[in-house]
Image (cartoon, rainbow, N blue to C red):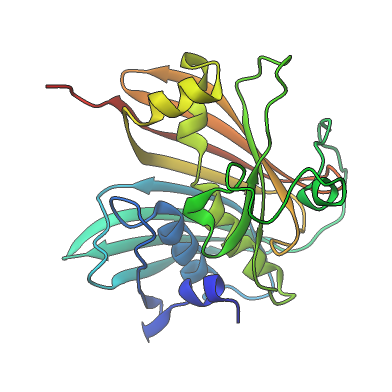
Length: 278
């Protein structure tokens, strides 16, 4: 099993109750993507023969690295085509996170998505001699222990406010789609709030300066899984600002595979508060 997938696995305490451990990856509190991934895994462990198609979550309290997180699953509905689950994650006797997830049987039907112009993949850049493994300015350090992750350099002529990067796991993953869904949930919490404030800082240098002055914290998060994909192959995460107001920021994210197929969509609102200066 890959190290990142192993880190998201749970111990079953009793029926519909699970326990997860946390890793300190350098964030001020337990990384939100870890709780997202573990909560989705808890819900999945109570579902058979269906894959998740949507997740809606709220971050309620900071997670404590030093004690396990308890995940309690409520089996809200088992229908003919859809299954609904609610998960409450708790520490110190209080909920720190809630998640609602819906699962669906595989069906055939209409198929459409909005295509975009895809940037070159890291493999293509490496073949062209434009990217080397030690290209530190491209690497995203927070994800570096478990993922290959490279920022897509913005076009100097394009004043876009989006943030985009390529990402895939270091290790190969099993073929089960659920494993790849869990990993995408983990990745999806990274970068959306930084994207939300990009309209206030046009250049990369200005953005870095602004980010260093901000307090970021996820509040609510949603994921829609559209199509099968592999998280151990390159995925483009395209994050775009939607709104900033009242010290909150909202951003939309889109995951594409290397063929330009839209595989998942995310939305997040969170705290985007300027730090107080003395």
